[in-house]
Image (tube, rainbow, N blue to C red; front, side, top):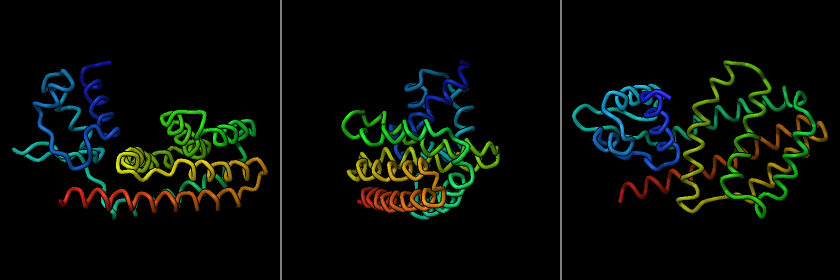
Amino acid sequence: MSLKLQAYTTIKEKILSCEYPPNILLKEERLCEDIQASRTPIRDALSRLEQESLIQILPKRGIIVAGISLEEVEQIYELRLLIEPYALERYGETIDQGVYKKLKDFFTRSSKKFSLDEIHKKDDEFHHMFISAAKNAYLTQAYQYPYIQNIRLRILSGTLGTPRIEKSQKEHCEITQYCLEKSWKKAAKALRVHLLHSKEISYSIITKLQLLLNR
């Protein structure tokens, strides 16, 4: 891995994991120290991350990690509600039934048998598989930014004390059961309900974060 790619990957991971939380002001000096890299790869990484709207570079001040506003949550879920239920209903039947059986088993046992990290990874897999099944590069590209922001929202949910793991897993079970029954319209409708519940939690997270920032 080149130094530029290593710097980009490391800083991005720190942003997505909220080690660098939303709205924090960073300095190049800190990044060089954290990443153990010189200014050249750091600046290249920052340029890429600014293009991805994950940071904002302020001349003579520093780098601000992009916040997540209530308006942005609305836009993120507007897109997810358009894309994900459509992809499930249109392409869900192309996914092998064995995949749904394994997912149903996982979601049934997840809260007691698996770590939070494993649950999050399976959640990503679940939501991504319908987009991947479409084999549509434009659809995949449109989904990337909401996916990135969803990672941060999920981390903040745990940090700010508003997790809904058990309810979320029950909703996943319902969706996969409809998929096993090949009831694609019902599955898409259940996915839509699941996303609306996630949207409510996301609003709560950002509202709490804004209150903390305004203290």
